[in-house]
Length: 158
Image (cartoon, rainbow, N blue to C red; front, top):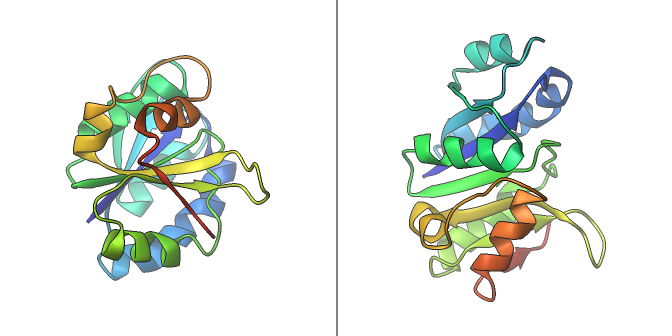
């Protein structure tokens, strides 16, 4: 159902925190694939990708460029794209499943805690991402895409 896209560059230390959060959702079929859009990692990032069964696509450039390449490689109808810091709340799955079940196909986003929490991840159909022009280089790619997806995008409460 979902392809998770991770913009990586020497991200091994952060991957050990986010990948275990995806495993139960992968076992249950919610997460169909994980794509590492990697900018030439020299640490254990690529070994972690191989061990986890993730697909790796090479993509030089900033996080926006890597997310664009990663989304282009996604095969699922839905994409969950994380920011370069690869942070995902432990309770991410419940609101994502609820949104997919009743969100009417609308894009959504997961925010950091707080009233004005920054985007940590964007959940959108491949069609919505493409219709909004996809991810672009420069700045905060999640925030920029959300700006083009709004007002249709819903904030998921985690």
